[in-house]
Amino acid sequence: MPKIIVVVGFGPGNSTAVAEKFGAAGFTVAIVGRNAERLAAGVAALKTGGITAAAFTGNAADPDSMRAAIRRIHAELGPITVLQWNAFGGENVGDLLATDPSDAREVFDVAVVGLLAAVREALPDLKSAGDGALLITNGGFGDASPETDAFVTSIHAAGVGLANAAKNKLAGLLAARLKSEGVYVGEVVIYGTVKGTPTGGEGAIEPSRVAGTFWDLYQARGDTRAKIT
Image (cartoon, rainbow, N blue to C red):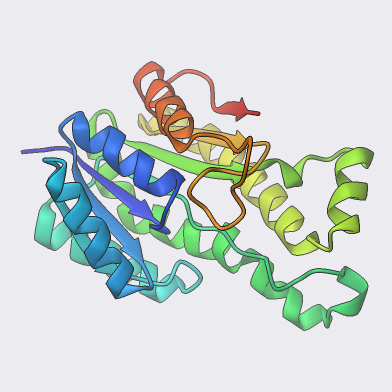
């Protein structure tokens, strides 16, 4: 039975590169996102490259949607080996003091609630795989430093900063919790923009570097975090 990687938050850039990297190593790739048209194009491109792939619609901010997507993947493709979380959120919260406090809850919908729901649903598969893993894409805006906080505030990206920080802590807690269960947790923290994405420009990071770093973490199953600048 082939190994299966689930890539949540599929789109151009990191998620495509991760799907290609693991798919080239023999994994069956399940891509998850809200845009069915984008997913269909992604599956077609992966298949053109000789990768077995399938698409599943799901909203990373909705725990019920994530649980349902994981269940469909298991039923249609088989047990999941790797869950790769590339979804991100918090973009709608810019200036904290100009945001209604109740609206700030959405910052954690993708970074914590959706991610945790997907992990819990996939956990029996990840534990039984023998080499099961949770791989998380994150960004440097979550760093707890005065310099980072000043920069994030100046560009009105407080929501992304909070989401990154929460996801970073969650990754560490899950790594500690799941180590004894035989499930590896690895996080790649990106400091900069990525080529192929809406914010990527001159000097942006190649997504293949991100995918290669995830592959190295998965193979070594040692360090929990890696940084890319």
